Length: 579
Ligand code: GLC
Image 1 (spheres, rainbow, N blue to C red):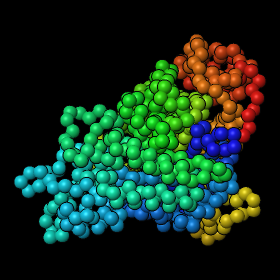
Image 2: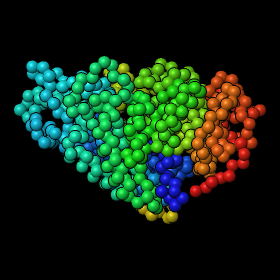
Image 3: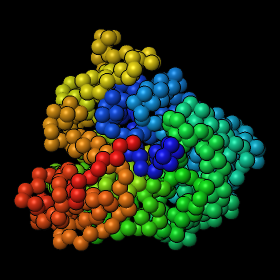
Image 4: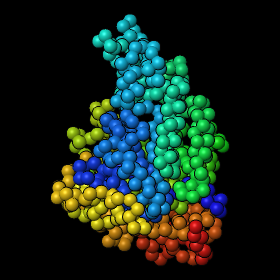
């Protein structure tokens, strides 16, 4: 909390970085921590308060790094712990906080404790850290229950015992390379307390908690009966044992000083839920400071659906406890998703592939409008890297280049999430479009205050080397989305985001949301005198009475807002409230 009682994370704009795809300093085609460090100037200019880094830990990459083999280290492909420390230090010099991903539901099958479990006998303490069971059937050849992996296929894999015979089965709610921990074993909470302290001691401002609605399983491991309701409580989702655990984590977070930078520490849980009642326990005082609010990801491009999504979230939280998002590394990019009229579902990527190039312009316009809507809501918002560039979902990644386990395990039925993870285009031209090879034209790696820490990276040009191809192929026309192109274009996505974030920062003392009646527009006011208007219809619509247009996602003529557009208005002269 700062001196005036303000807690930074309650209204922060946080930028999600998928490190492998953000910026590659050493030219091997994979993004890394020095690459991110070299682009902190870009993030400071964008105006974000914090970055959340998806996993950068050692990992065999069965699931893009969410299969962690060492929770307290940096994958050598991405850098070193010293690089991480420099990153935190340089980010702080830019007033940017660092949030790291905590992956407590499962580890990697390469984690030393899982290897030890495989080497040990059934019933051993080593196996008791995971969920090993005998199979059903005369030879134990059937899985212990009927649970299904999130990536397709059974949630159980059978191991070969030391004597060479087929043996027990272990549970993995995701890929077989991601064995689930047994959270009822006291070793596991103790292990994760150490991990949490390890990163907090290194100066991180918070944790993003992966699969925070998972972790505990019903000890009887009962079969699922009937078709499971997506995100509803189940024998492996939303168990009551979670809340006491999160209270212990909250106590750890609160034991770090709230004064000074980075301020009070947060943790934001990834909690997908079916109904408000399912979310309520997570919002009880003393638990996780925040949980994600995925309500804006779900609706199709319809005013009523957006209004319902906003109302349902605000009824539970003021926005501060549940940050808003319109995308992340798991869902198709908004600029493509909004090309479809229907809401998000597991079929969305396949639908986009079938759609080809149709509706691309409408998708982009709607994504610009959605950005203004997102950033006008009360509370905190997360932006996923590339959203500020309006990057579309890449739908034509060749099968051989796809990496997502969901693609492999469903034999291509679900194309998976690679399309929103394609490396960022920084430059208009050149191999990798500036993704590889140092700090390039936009953004600077120089530490403010005269270089408190060593240079972010050895630029490729210094080494006379040629960068490798990016780990996922970029579409050939992506130079037009590059940071370089967009900085030169006043009306670009990037400049819209930069202006929106600046205005948001300057007018941070806005009050709660109040819906306004406005013909053909979705409109809300926030006192004193701020109005958001969004046009989901097919015709232009008259803006409500206002004094000034602060920002619009499309040109406004004659006081009428075009279709698929949004505007920020002031009803009076707003007094900037700078913190
Ligand atoms: C979360 C992550 C996702 C990952 C899964 C398993 O949903 O966001 O990327 O595949 O957890 O760790």
